[in-house]
Image (cartoon, rainbow, N blue to C red; front, side, top):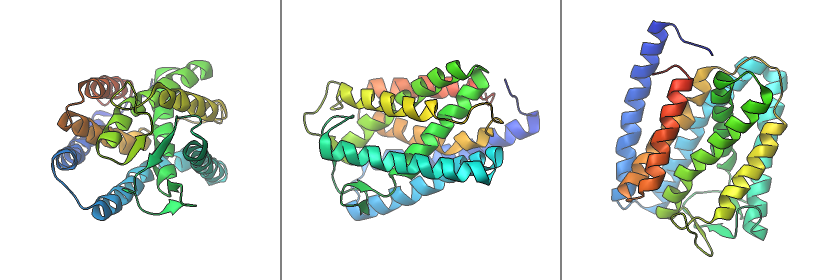
Length: 246
């Protein structure tokens, strides 16, 4: 387990608290206020990119550019490929479609921002797993469960805001079980191919996904989605304790 010196930990707590408050207010706005789709898409895309930067930089710092850049680009292409496959065939997430809220769809299928949203989640899950266990097998399992846990919070909120929808709906706030199977499958492959026995990725690499978790927790609360909110609280508490930020 890796710990922070008290002064550094305090700065992280203050900084994360301020940004979390901003995202809290944004989440309330997203859930309660009607926003023009074009503006919502633009603001969301910019926010996703900025939230991804700490994760990308953390991987570069830990692994060096020679390994990190191919890894990040490969994961990004993988995310686009799998998401496009899902839109066209319904596998592995179930039949779904984007509803035009996010700008700039690649090949008219999925938003260009997909890699900037998914790859940092993978990185953050890996960061937490590295602080929980030194076993690569346990790290694979912990990271995978965290990744699916993230989606248990994000997906119902995104469906509620009309960012995407599933053709047949689903038992979990209009999200089908196949979606979580898809996340388990694609995440399992990504973590299985993750470079082994490398230096730990810095804690700050989990900052963006952590703050986005706050955002989506507020959205789910505003939409009255109790179970995703409870999952988010549990997930955040576990991650904070694992990262020694609490």
